[in-house]
Length: 450
Image 1: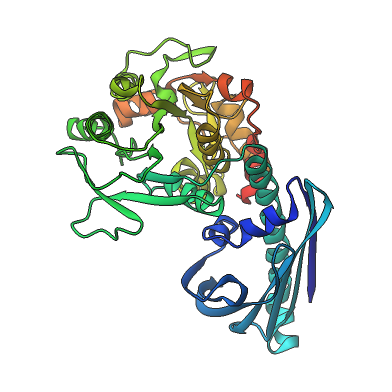
Image 2 (image 1 turned 120 degrees about the horizontal axis):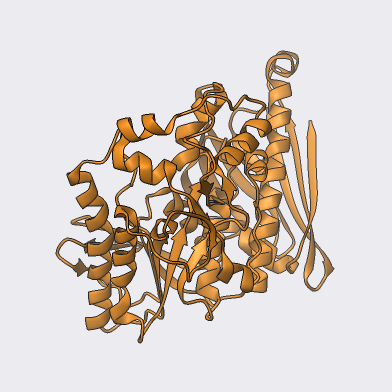
């Protein structure tokens, strides 16, 4: 069987090739529906061996691949040395169309074992999955590489807190593939100093961060609870954000360092509930989360005059691997999602891929400072959002969740997370011409194959 995918990328061929040759590129291109993990890599890129572990039909399989026929700046090929196929050969070509345009060609030639049996029972699903995988990879590449080429950034050393979370993991792959060195803040007695920095936000201690140029602070207790918030949960939500930010800010105030940009996660929960559009200048709310976010951002104030500080006000981040989509997807598949409360409350969301690209955009764009709304350009009411999702996956959206049930069962948490109306627009990102990839829930469903 042979498969081919051709796309035009708005970046030079060498730029595209170099991106593929970096750590992080493989994981960045891995579709969310695939279960593949890199176990080990050995050797330089032009003859690298990669040990993979993958699952198919619930069965774990090992795969050893090697790079061959490498022409630097132009093409390379992956071949299967040992694995589930009788043979596998994946050629990546980067042909110049102009100084800033590349014709990118992926060609996969494979043979299945026990040809007739495997073609009968698994060939059709394999063909579908390979086509979906190539389409996904090319869309990621087109958007990532155009952004990186349009907004170049000298190699940076970037520290990330909360790197084990959904945003942190994917952001790490993105930044490594872009050519940057990434170090994770970890709570370990013996960190791996090559890529980890020890820290304890409770006592305000950080390890050696003298080589960092950028700090991205994503750590924080999840705001979701199994049923409702108790006081201990609310204390953890607040302390994990405010105290940890204070710890970093104190170190940046008192220690010698090279940090020029501090990106601190924030949330659109800072705004008051309203049906009216809210920009970064919108009024703050007076509920629990609004006050937490306001104090979280205020903790950055002592360094605003010496370091560029950006408060990334994330909306609901959508991706199959976590967050609200992972929690709600089983219910959507059962047709058990519908209107929550009146359904006219606005939901401001952003796809994970647009979220991590926006973080890079904040690093590269020196004009961005202070609060920046990280949401898709067109907020939707909760009911419209659910209906669009249901239509995309061909499911009903008629099961209501009355407001009284939300309030009685989930209490304050349900009222804040499900009944508040947050119609937030990304005024600063749009003014800076940030290129969003996914702007509707339909886009999200089709791209992530929900």
